[in-house]
Amino acid sequence: MAKLAQTSVKYVIKSSFDAEGIVEKPDVIGALFGQTEGLLGPELDLRELQRTGRIGRIEVNVITKAGKSNGEIIIPSSLDGTETALIAASLETIDRVGPCNAKITVSSVEDLRTVKRKYIIDRAKSLLSSLLGQVPDTSIVAEELMQSVRSAEIIKYKGLSAGVDVPTSDSIILCEGRADVITLLKHGIKNAIAVGGTAIAPEIIQVAKEKEVTVFTDGDRGGDLILKELKQVVDVDFVARAPLGKEVEELTKKEVYKALREKVPVEQAQFLKPIGPSTSESTRRPARPERREFPDRSIHRDSTISRSPPRSPRFEQKRPTIVKKTAVSAEDKAFFKEQMNDLVGTRAAAIYDSDKQFAGRVPVKELSTSIKQVESPAMVVLDAELDQDLVNICDMAGVSVIVGTKLNGTPRGRNIKVFALDDL
Image 1 (cartoon, one colour):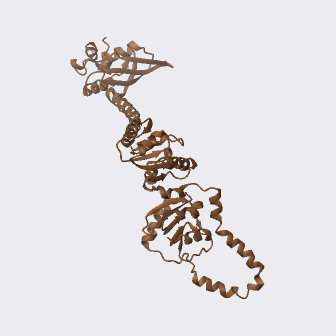
Image 2 (cartoon, rainbow, N blue to C red; image 1 turned 90 degrees about the vertical axis):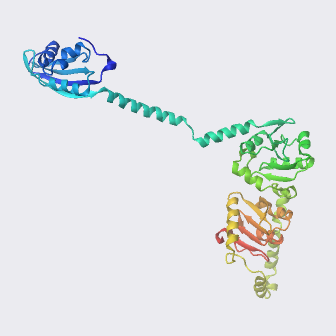
Image 3 (cartoon, one colour; image 1 turned 180 degrees about the horizontal axis):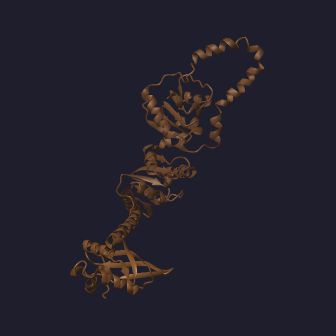
């Protein structure tokens, strides 16, 4: 009997049999060939089909128990579906196996191609899932590519790490080190050059001689030291500064461009320096006269009590309280809210002129000394509670509007309007 090649099998007929006596495998195979012979004509004769290889090797498994036999019959087929179904149905006409009565039942006709297709689909799903997991988002690929290209654009100019546009640009940005230059390159800024720390290289003087110079410092004491050194040897035009506590190399693209937009002329940059001991003392001085004056009044209470009641109301009428009841226009509300959003968490004060043009940003604790360096300050927005000391500082400097997160007490001023964030 010919054995059908595995690659040519299309269908598998699976059936079971029950015999009322003890039978063996040759008995079952003999019954299959003998009792189906001539049943479907010579073209579908099992013996002939197996001889020509259209029916494969018939597998029979026999189990004998308690004087009876049962088992399984498996027939592979390369016929088409109709012919295979006819062969399968003909098996159920067999009623004897060997000397015993028997019954054969076809349980299924399986299409091996369907099984293979299911395996192919399941495997393809697994492979596709793995493939998609390896493919990054297009925007991520583009950003990585741009960052790689920009990082590769760093050059050595006169021995210093610099962006590719430094030799040809009319303006340059001086920053502390090579890492700062790489950060700016990644964000598309190609005219930065590293000064190499507080020991300013002589080449910096030569590079900056005929260019507009912006110094971009870290938001710490080291940044102030570099600025101080640069101002002694280079004609600095503008100063930009990283947010307090951050270095330039740590900044995001948004923070870099924001810092550069808010650069100030070098003449106004001195108020960006952190507060020192002497400045701290001057910041607290406005409050001292009031603290000394109060005990004096309490000591001489009996001599001044007759004059105090009328004096206080008259004084308050001349200095109206400017708190939450003061009106503010919708345009000003929008402006102040926007500036306050930029300040949240910085503990800083932003100073503007009467045209709402940005003049500088300083830590709140430096406001008393820094505001004196600004010409005609008109508006101040602070990430801090407004107390009487802050209002006095701004009032004396000629500021007309001050905005803080909230009010500490009831601060008053002669010519200044006071707003809390809740008023906006």
